[in-house]
Length: 398
Image (cartoon, rainbow, N blue to C red; front, side, top):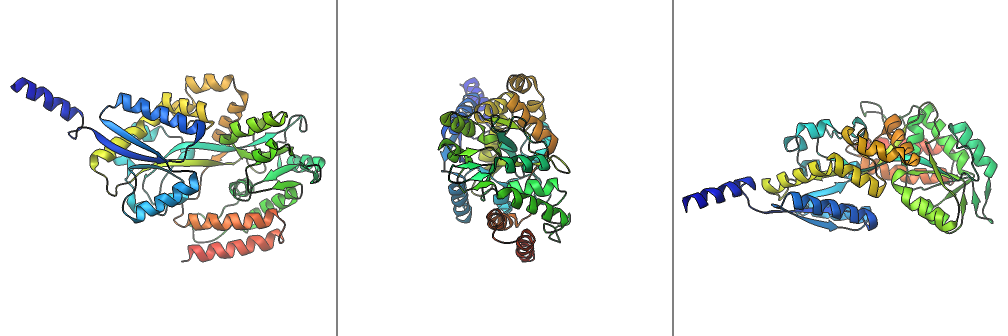
């Protein structure tokens, strides 16, 4: 009997002293993405039978954001959740410092392009990340543009004929990250390095805005994804979109019966391209230590080379660790898929992330509003930038 009790104690201690623990994981992955995430979670549970993961799809990103805001306010957040950097800044104090729970080698393996430092704290890690690339019709654009100048020339050549549904390019106002890519390539930034001054409307910002305004004259401008227009038979010669949109864009082109390829974004003073996608964070509010430790184990599992490569292959997102992106599994994969190699090279050559300012949520909302004004030609670029800068200055001064 004593031996049986000792054996039972060993088993319990092996489970962290808490027996089976349940954690909740809120996400916004639907369709094939949701299936891939479910498969990974099932694999994790098979390897970690002491952890039950309540994987909860909360709708799209907007729905997930609103539910997280409400849950944090009520003191009832999930254990783990996907979140954009600009969401994270709203609930910094509700999140766990991950360097206290994740192995040092896991954090050290994350690519520097995905660095997540909020006010000196590591409270999220990258998960489903993509990069902006250029999608183009090779039948219309045999040689994709490598520079802003070439892009503008080709867009003008194709022109814009709304009656025939023909456009040189396309832009989505809800995606100001395209403007931020142009801003970064021109050598500009939203704020000064010390965050005390708005710099977005300086000479570099004006270059980016004027380029966008000129090319927007030949563009389809719509809030819906460009793949929606392509699928309906509208001709768009080329457009900038995320690598995560690859499957949707290719399927739309297939439906329309037109070819579609991928190239790096055109460059200006540099070849910067803004990183998209969410991160994973663990909430400390209303969670036991056992739940936090179990969630940390899940994160480490998801960032393991075999799992992150599986995730990238199934979803169109990119590996976020050095081990995975330079490893044989991924390198063999992209050797057979040149378009995925373009995406990988784009990330490594010029990927940059969001501004981790505590007011970035408000700043991004302003960017969306004024980016739409710029694309629709509702004012001179300088006037639009100056008005935007004034509003951002008011936000960061609050």
